[in-house]
View 1 (tube, one colour):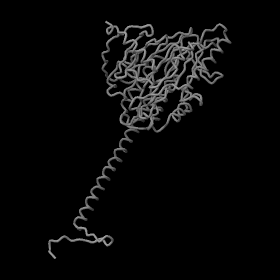
View 2 (cartoon, one colour):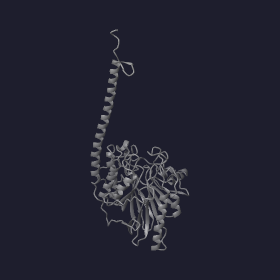
View 3 (cartoon, one colour):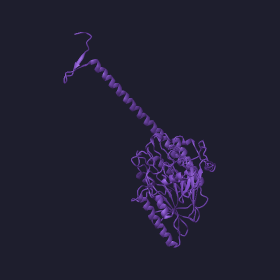
Length: 441
């Protein structure tokens, strides 16, 4: 046998020979691959540990900040709500009732969003403190647990952070759910987050889960009465749900609509309180009401398009009040289906105003078929790329419901001097927005 012939070993089961050198090389390669995989796994574990520690430390600092604000000082006796015989909260007053609408606060609660979360807390505290509202209504998306922007799937820390801050401010508040409060991949589903708000030890939180036989969570009513007991305004809060048509992650912007049993719930309760008003005062006019939810109705889109297509001039159906549409693409990202809520508003002749969020750069208010459709000013520092550097869209909406049933609403920008900040406000660029009056020319 030649000295250069390779050594071989024979598999006793198959009888095939294998080069010993080749077998050794194969084992080395397999060991190398194994070490590489173990190295990657170790790196991932170390990364997760580091980000967990950073997130825990950062969230602890933000939780501490959330309770560092002073309680809001009211110039007169603060209104205190009571539950009526139907289980709904009611405020009694002879003066205008002031609501502060906040929307799309977008607290991430993860290691990637710590600084922006801090900014959001600061903005909310400054606006609530200055406005001293009777009630704060958040129209969705307090939380934003999107991992590639927040660095977490956990949607409870943002909820806890916000609730703790509102309790320290000592202002009555409630909320409607948005699509981001409970994502498909979030740690806690809508029911569990609903239970957190409803059952937590939060004295000033008026959130109620709503009837079990009505779709969604947080369908609730808050009434305003005059001293005689007459309901002068009913505030209806709806769960506008999340994604639909198989778009469980929302990548195709397929949003749900208000469901029919929610509309039936609205009609039944409206009739109930109208009947009670007429027992108290037989000649009482139809109860005035307003609606709050996150995702805009399709009528927002139709109203804006009607106005734009008429050369930014009022039409018989649509009258411009204020604001602009800053979103691109669809402009109004409403539910993709049809619902009968707006038609029911028209039929019942009660609801005079609708307030939503969701589209952060939209802040317009239009009257459509006699009903005011308004986008609230958003808070968001996190969800839209680069939005933390921009300031024109950031703020709140101040709504006053008058004893005669009428209302007024005003958009307020956060960067006004009147919103004195506990901590330094971040530098932003105020985008140049072309006034509607100039577009019309």
